[in-house]
Length: 301
Image (cartoon, rainbow, N blue to C red):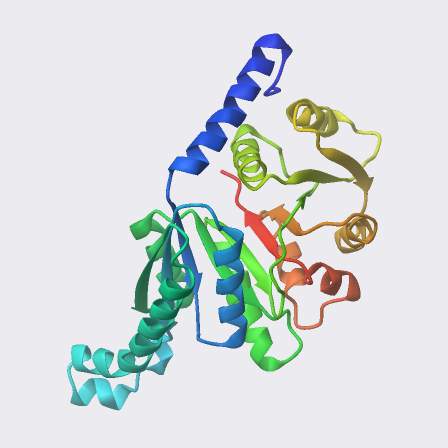
């Protein structure tokens, strides 16, 4: 069923846009900033602080200590609490220092900073944080995957995208913030542009004043059913819409990026193989070109 049919639906659409804008202005966003204190993580944090400028936000600076890092002999000889305290001493100090710096540097913003340390499996710790703090976004860095260390970071990114149901903003290594204007949503053949996704997209482009591009990948160019649904739902957004029959998702997206000035790419985390290719240990040149831009990952309901 189309979201926007007839005059009543037109009024409903504009009411929806207005509501999205008012809501985004009034509601404080809760955002998880993952860090391992590397340059890459710090760069992602700085990108997020500039990206959400003008929005009231609570930022959770989170460090996850690997469970495997606990030494069994230490656990046998000492209480768990004392071992945890010893392990947490350095990251606590680093988080405290980082928090103090960000409070000073962003005093002009309506930002609040909190620190979190967890001792758990990486994705389990993040899932718990999403539930506990009712998070709106997760922000993390990704190096792509050109060496062993970066493959590990890629693995963490993949796991978060696949296993944690929360909007996730992935910032490439070394990417410097520039005010975004063009927003590309990539829809795989199996992705339905339903009301849940439309609400997220409308709120996002309205608040950040973005020009919407939609690239619909189809298996059969003759089958127009999904395209008709897309066009109905996008009718009042002024979106640039293109459908492409493509078996090679990577080449289709890379070609679009070559001909359009996109600032952020977005897709829905349904296709596991697509996610794995995106952060694979030997990405092809099309995927590498896409990883030069921030990536926003959405999750279907």
